[in-house]
Length: 216
Length: 282
Image (tube, rainbow over the protein chains, first blue to last red):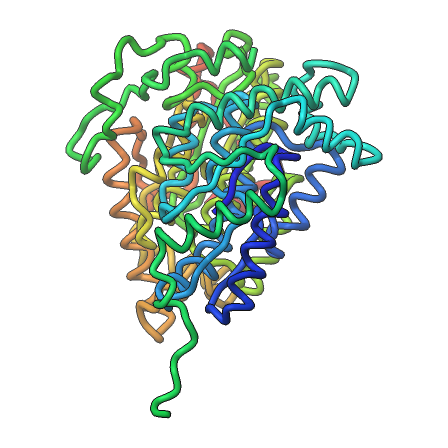
């Protein structure tokens, strides 16, 4: 499970971790935040027409997560699969709280989520993360930039202010939610090495290895 | 404003009337210091993000009850009565939001969603209506007649095995209605009425997803009985005004009008429906 602000490098790292495990032949499933087909059309419509408020934004994402949780994550965990998640409930805790949703309400909302074995938190200084996103993307989307909060009319500036709040939210969870903090500014291959070492030491990977043939 | 909301200690716990209802109070309830009177007057728990409750001048009146309890009939009549008295009226009901109303219809038709996903989609639908329809109406002094509210949604989740605290926590930011009527009927009566309406009983009305019985009648009765029990559990906690839904339409309507008149501070007047609604008056 990886978490971190936009531009912290988490998706790249999780992809590499996934490749490593795939090549090793382990049973695994990869799931992404906000990807359930059931909820997707509603989210898209809400974003396009700007119907979403902090509360409904949060609830739709919870519905998306519930769908993936009930239909993929839980059954696969039961069946001894490694589940890799690009963003998890902590994204909602940090982001929706940055939008003003009460923390206690959010914690209750996601109470059904299984606690991850490892939560990697890719921490990158605000400037680095913001620069990565702004230089790589032609235009920030409305909700992505936190424009709905009315903090600034300038999308880049709004994005920056929004990300600062989110970062603060993540930092608060490091201890309470046992984040494994990694330095998002390190070179990609170094970070990946750290990540693989931690996975290998904390997870009994043999459990997820392909079933050995009955006899030689 | 969102900032201020955030700063409030998470301990602004809902004023949970600790009846025997709630199995175990949430851990944080211990720290529930002074609850904010202002917001608890309008919300069950946490205030809704970015909303100032002092602006409410309308009334929120909820009619709850199972399928076939006569809710829709009574709401149509009440709307006409209130309008004839000069009040602006707005109605709301489940699956009517612009945001996800139709998505839920689709999920139900395909029976594609699991219970939690469905519960959260309904919550999205509910809050979208609160924020875009109900609150603006209440702010402009309109009377909102709600055909069902969070109680049906909570009951449906709980009978499907979702934790009761989870469900009520989900709706902690729901508006507290000025009046909540519960039209209580026997499931057997409701079955007859519903069947007469459509010459059939729908999959969801009968709770078929719960595998209670292959016999539609028994499935309906068992399911609605479970829902009814949840309503009994909530009746006290949420101050339901229980009415006998087996009584005649005019008799139930009279009781509703009396109580609503009191609430609105008007004299209870005589009412007979116009020709357009006369067929409901029996």
